[in-house]
Structures are given as structure tokens and as C-alpha cells.
Image (cartoon, rainbow, N blue to C red; front, side, top):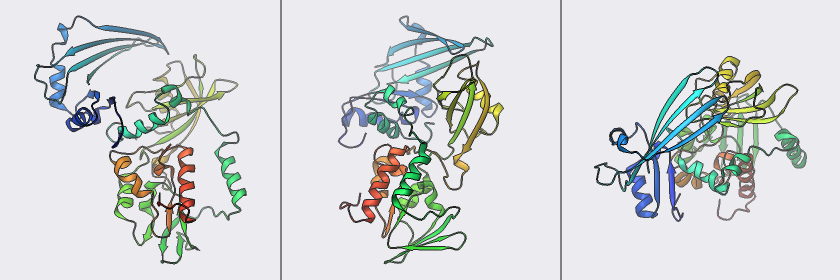
Length: 380
């Protein structure tokens, strides 16, 4: 939602429940807003909780039954103009109370959510960017997980290498990159050196800070790497699941150990799925932890086998998929897409479109190739 963007309405997480954001939406964009109120606005949160909710006799009930649980939600709305709530342009407040019963254990959980109008790190603009690329359609956004290369990503890489005829050097971590002004020298940790007229640096932004660049990179590049663009605690795990509900796609609320589970295909017993997590406490090699995480979605599910990778603790990734922080899309991105001397940068992290996806990596690679070939006149 940068300058020039037409916004008719905005739904935000608690991180963006800020007075200046509300004013910008109403005064600059002539838009409505719906914002979650949590503890990051303690005065407002207390005031919303203290509203005369018991006096609201009109309410809506929704009931759902499935996935091993029964859930009831009651929704109340209250006009709050004149009630002294100190928040710009606040007109209505909404209270959602949810009861969830686990049909297997009988355990009942309750949650109350107040609306006025990993949220601690990520920017709403990242989700808004993906949402716009999906034509503002949830089914299209969820569907991006459904398409796979016939021979997998490894097949794509093999085809690219065969087409390029390039030399491939493995197990050679880079220690330094030196731009002498007319050549670039790359030195590995093992002491080997490679030279070229220009170089494409195709590592995640989070890893830039681990390479000694000479001259040092400009502040915006160093700042982006230090702040991180890829989710720094990201993990991915493959799961062999057996359950009562067939191939199941699941998305959890913020704070669940596995944020997403995506089914891949049926097996002789159960099915193969992959899951994503940003939970620092989740051990993707611990089947018991994964079992508990999966059963939060489907109490009947059994994890028969699992294999995961902790991308955040991988020294050659320092994180997982792209999820930009506030200001990185609107202020940082264009700057770090530019070449620096004889260096060009390629990473899905700095794609203009599907950052965090293979499409974004291809987009960024094409731009970097054009830059080193002198075919990108605006240096973007």
C-alpha cells in the first residue's frame, strides 16, 4: 500500500493497530479499516474490554463441526462514537468469542478477539503483495502450493546447468568478494580464488553479512542483511501422515507450532505432506513434537515418519522464505535491487513480484543477468 495505491478498505493484524496507520488510511486514502486490538495497545485494549458488551442483545452465532472438534462463535458489534475511546476515526468495535470442543478429549478452549475497525516481525505489506498477485482471491493464493515442476526443482537446476555449460564448484563456501575496479575476485574459505569481469551474488539477503565484501556494501544492503528479510526462524518438514480425513490442507492461527500443512500425494498408507513453521521451539527432528503439532489440526492424525530442515540455523541460508519487515518493501527493496560496482544481486528475497517463491528467484536472476550484460538501462 505505497504511494499511488488505491485502498478502499484495510484489514490488519495487531502490529498495525497504530494511530498513524489509522489516520493515513482515512485521511490519505479515504478508506475504512478493521484492526485487531491486543496488548501492544494496552490502554485501547482495556477500554474495548470495558465496553458494555452485556448490553448488546443482537449477536450472530456461527457453528461448525469437523476435523475432530466442534466450534461455536458469537459475534457482537457496538457503535462506540461518543464513548471516549481514544483512537482516530473509531466508529464501531466488534467482539468475537469462540468456544472449541475437542470431540476426542472433551477439552474446551475459549478465545475472545476484539476488533476495532507473527505480527511482531512481519509487515502487512508482504501479505498484501502476495494477496494482490493472487487477484485478492484466497483460493488462488492457497493454490500456489499446488503446482510443482514435473521433475522437481533439481530437474530445473540440472537443465539450467546443461544449457549454460557452466563449471559447477560444490562444497566451497565463499569467504570474501573483492571488486578491484576492473575485475572481481572471489575467495573461498578453503583459500581457492576465482576471478571474473563481473559477478552475480546469488545468496539469500540474510547471508550477505557473513561475506567480507571489499569495498564494503552500502548501508542499505548491510542493514537489510542485519535486519533479515528471510524469516529467521523458518523450518520446513516433510510428514508421512495417517488420519481419518484423507488429504488435509491446514492453516493455523498465529502461534501454532506448524503454521501450514500442505498435502502432496496419497501413499499406500496415509499421505505425504509438507509443513512450515517459524516456532523457535519446534524440533523438526522430534516426531513426538511434530505429532502434537499435527494433532492440533486433526486429532486423529498419526505422524508415521518425518524429515525436516531448520533453515534458520543453516549457515548458508540464515532463514527461510521471504517475509519482509515494515519499510523493507516501500523503502529498501528498490535500493538493494541495484548493482554495486561490478556486483549484481539475485535472490527471491529481492524480487518485485513473487518474493519467497521460485518465480521470484527467476525474476531476480533475469534482472541480475541483464545488469551484468549491460541490458538493464535503469539499473533495476
